[in-house]
Image 1 (cartoon, rainbow, N blue to C red):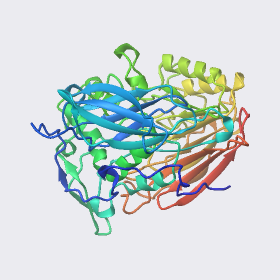
Image 2 (image 1 turned 180 degrees about the vertical axis):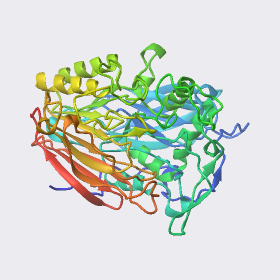
Image 3 (image 1 turned 90 degrees about the horizontal axis):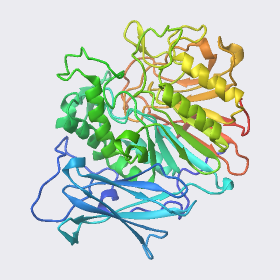
Image 4 (image 1 turned 45 degrees about the vertical axis):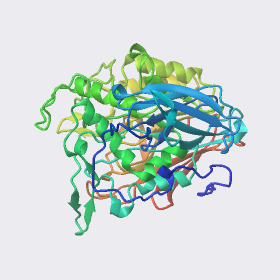
Length: 526
């Protein structure tokens, strides 16, 4: 098993320009006010950086945030000199979207490096423009032999561990950027809207963890502005902004974008919340999510907006991004003998079966925001994920997964791999019918990675319904171990263009590859 270089070859990713990216460790005050500055003079500023989302062979979506009303203008070019640049006139952005905006790019060349710069112009005087902010990304290949490589993880600023200036902030993002992936999959918990950040926390060994704090992170998020402030918080980190400018992302959500273990229709009994209706909180969070991440399916008309989608990344890869949060039924003991809602909802399950059957990609990576066979409790009697601790025949939410796995086997769908985060450790599970209570499926792998910047936790128990075997695990032996005590985790997927082999590497911050697995193309199970 060979690793690609951790430092990109010359020309693969070029040095980014602009004062925003000049340093990965700019000193930041411990308390920050993040509201836009309504200056009467000066020019619009894009100091929150740029992002690109859901890149395909011909399209991408560019994001920016201004400090005041402005017109968004994007230029793209094949070279850093921006000779023969193409101009894309974006929206007028203002307070309605918290001064964020996105511009779709179409008709891009496949398999090519695209350089872009975003300029913000005064809406009343287009000649008055701010300093451009630069970024780059690579479009998906049109040819199989080009290969694909991406990273995944999740769980950012959780359990009281935010941006710590004493350790250089979110340094794991700098490490991931240097690996130079084609894109990054964030498997949920992009924020912890229910996680308050204290200015300092004393660790068990006596060291002190310091957090950069903001007003919005001083309480649980309930209002739209508080959710917006939670999404802004991570962009205070220089490493993350530099990463966003170089590595496009595919983003999904899970529970902490709203509140721990939430489900539709829930009424809270948490004394920290004055607003008890989770559906209202979720709607506010989704609006802020749509404003702060470039997700094309969330930019559609309200009736068509959805998180679940397929991101097609050339002949080798289709990425199926699930939404295991918005359509689920209530958390429960999970022993129902009939469950048509489950964790995906009937409509999303039908969509997933249909799209998997239509896919002609060599690999169908299923990006799940929760694991399948790991038991994730919610209180003393209920369960939060799919598994519910009963190793027998499928019950509750397991019934949907059994239906999906049966469909994959009977349709002869090859190359399915499951990726997730959520549980704050890293592991590899192999599922096989000979070990399972439910046997009508083909073997498959599930890989878990995370957190990126949150507390680490001990490994969860396994549920035997689908026959998981924990081939590898790295987890602490106590709860909520800080990032100063435990390396953070992320995963890497490398699909070779010549052989079609898919290699998964589970990585720990610091450059260590903890585990690797090579999978062969064209098989219904392995």
